[in-house]
Amino acid sequence: MKRKKVECRDPGIEYWDKRAEDFSESRKTNDYEYGRKVIEVLHEIINSNSEVLDIGAGPGTFVIPFAKKVKKITAVEPSKGMVERIRKNAQDEGVKNFDIINKVWQEVDTFELARKYDLVICSIVLWIFKNVWEQLKRMEQASKGYCCVVTGTGDWNDEEQKLWHKVMGDIKKPSYSEYPLIYNLLYSKGRFPNVNIINYTSERSVENKIRHRKLFFEKYIEVTPDIEQMIRDHVLVRSEGGKYKEEGRAAVIWWSVREKKEEIK
Image 1 (tube, rainbow, N blue to C red):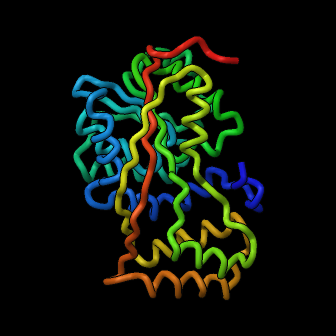
Image 2: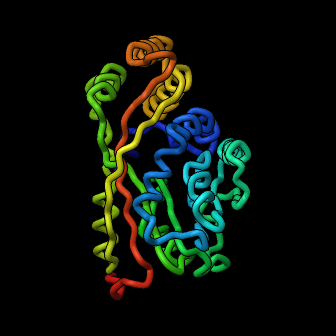
């Protein structure tokens, strides 16, 4: 993908360990608004008897709100930092009907999970995989009902673009618009995907946002003291009451594993 051509280093599991704190804070905004908005889209295909598999579960983005609506949710999450956050957030919310598979998705034996879940879902992780279609098929192997991919729409607000060019100069910013690619891939393979766009709010402390931006730019460039100061100034000017708030958009793509044409090679 275009993203990989710009990155100077591959963000491994340790990157997500470092992101656990700020990512958890942002996903908890407005009582897990991001996850609740996804549930609203999928409300007709899940219920109190549903079992869900969440791939790349992060700090409990879906685990916490989904657990309050379904029978059980299983999180696949390789980052120990994120797993700690799932357990802490679940304890804080009184959520117990979940378990965790502490592995990367590629290491999970889908034959053991075959046709086990009513819904298999993943969010903002497909770009990590070299063969996206292979991972989508593995999601289908574990589902007896539906699969869902939640991904970004590629929107960069003006302020984020200004910071990118201030730090990176004339280097073109990467485009993360994955949802049309995922939709077209599914359709070309004989699936009938549905798409809904959700809007949500993300809020975190100033220091967490600064840490988030530093980790982001470390994938592309050495973050010098001067660059760190640029990031700090950018965040502080746009913060209020010690909090940094931003609006986000995501595409919720879901399809039935029972309603598909013969796969097109």
